[in-house]
Length: 338
Image (cartoon, rainbow, N blue to C red):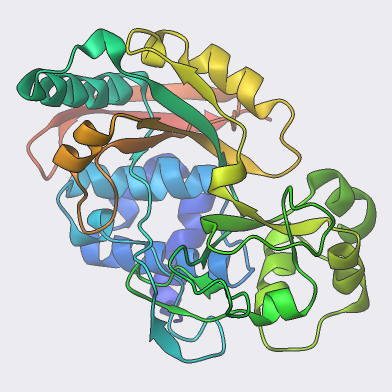
């Protein structure tokens, strides 16, 4: 998709002055169009805005204006023409992950789990919560229901129901994180992310590509690979990382929020790939079954995404203002410091 000239200009102005988004974008429809454009370009390997800008400016504004908007409750898929190949029904459904940006949101999520535990007669003190890194790569699926005798296969997430088969990535030598020798294969590993080793990218690929998304999109597309990308694959620096192989930490219900920042730091410190948060899930099967899922995500799982981009600003003024949803908010006029 392409943005109109007007929306392109508005996006450029917002990138320079994010605090003006409420004044520059008149309708939620225009905002969603900008979000979809940024999302599609990101998945195609063109980073129009940073992850932090996408989450904390664009998505945050849509949440403020219309918290019930359909876009916020659907899987953010790649565009129809992002990858070559026929769209096919996924062998198993692949959902996205609900996101939280404040500890208060994590507390509210834990509160919902407490209510379900009480309803089911489960002592909340026995509950275990698993924390894993939230990889920032390209979501893919190796179906768990796959026939072990069948050749390995891989699919994009698409819209959660339909995706594109990208088995060609394996045909090109794409390895799997923590397989035995780069060739031994374990069928049916489920969902994961295709990722690039950060250090290898900086040393060997950054001079050729602006960001790692360019690498990932090249691995997936039908076009022939550049020699430097093939070398990265051969060196096992570009891999499919199944979520079931991720390192994890387990805590009780009282430590989910209380120790989240501490656990996040220790969990992510040794990860060799880009991450943009921590995924938290309750492990009790009865609670999982009772909570179920929405059209886009499991209710028993949530990702905590912390804003790690900081800029020095000077506050010019603070004005109270009623949002379109009736909520009172403070509009802060800021100016970036030189």
